[in-house]
Image (cartoon, rainbow over all chains, first blue to last red; front, side, top):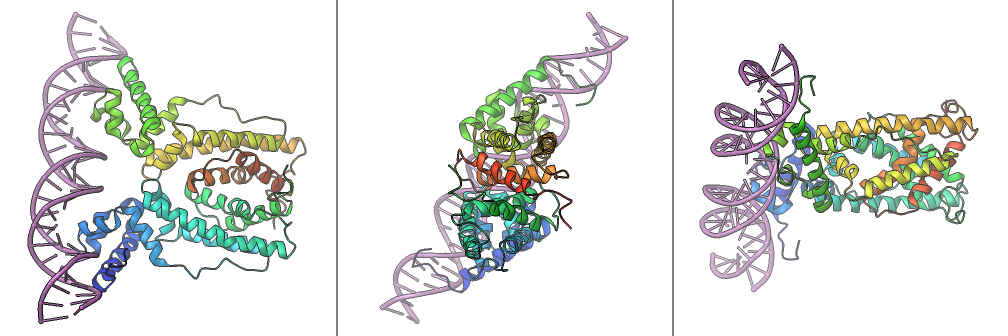
Length: 199
Length: 199
DNA sequence: ATGCTAATGCATCATCTGTCGCATTAGTGG
DNA sequence: CCACTAATGCGACAGATGATGCATTAGCAT
């Protein structure tokens, strides 16, 4: 949006109507049933407007994510690395299984829509960067050796959750977040992610 | 295919032409450029035939996978668990980055096509089941404690590779397969995947 | 209030995706 | 060889997706 854009009443109202419609359609019909036409109809907004402003389903989902505006999200801080990773994985599992799951839809859309892929990338970059503090705290507490590569640890801790729920499409298992967190913690404690231990 | 189907000359030839065309189109235009129309045109086969027989792009990719017929695939056997997991991850990394990557395309298509999703599921079930022998061997060698959950270990060892290459879309890193294998091995050695150690 | 223009609605068009009835060809068994 | 029918080609159609020119409405600055 350029500085001359009009965020006034109608523009904002259209956006709100459309994003509400996305959430409603996604909740009722799932990702497969989410079309630009159905969103426009439900929002009472003209198709051309939706195409012009959001481009494709991926663009819609990306904007739903933007509108959620989790700017105040904080990484978990439970007092232990394993607790932090478990809490983080619980959040991820929730985000992927809740109905409607914007996250799951965004991932699915990202294979077809550059807008969705970009939004996905930004979100993950932000979240992983923010979570690095969990690793810093663990090092300070003496739980982890200094020089632990935070990003690699975080990916190792969270990837199985995404893998099971998104790629393998297995039903959510309530133990998955904690199991995966424990695995990563054991590996990290053993120095799996320290850069100084690798020649 | 029912017992009365005709795998005779023309039917087999059409299939071969179409599957070759899929590979060629995927290699030249990527997943985004892969359409049923382009495949039919390139194969010199009528669109209606391709729709009838394969249904959608996912069906085409699933059949390419079937035709590859890796019935003789064996899990790696390097003499150590870490070596086996590293070799397995190298194969996965290769399969996801080679051009044309049937695997990457199948994953992308699986969010839109039940045929692709089903083919994906079967392939993963088969591969993970076949790889369990790697864990059995490690237990026999005394590398792992008895009662190690093979599936959980294999998912933990491979999920970061898929996560980085498929979901995060990061460029392939030649150290990724070995790093990830080492992480899973350290965790497994520490008992992360033993069912008896968890109350 | 007026002028300017961003944003939206409308109607229409083009292209893509998916399907279907009919005709033709190919493969099999007797 | 003939009969049967699975598989394919053809042409046409329907609906979905995406885009566009023009008209209208809305938001902002003066």
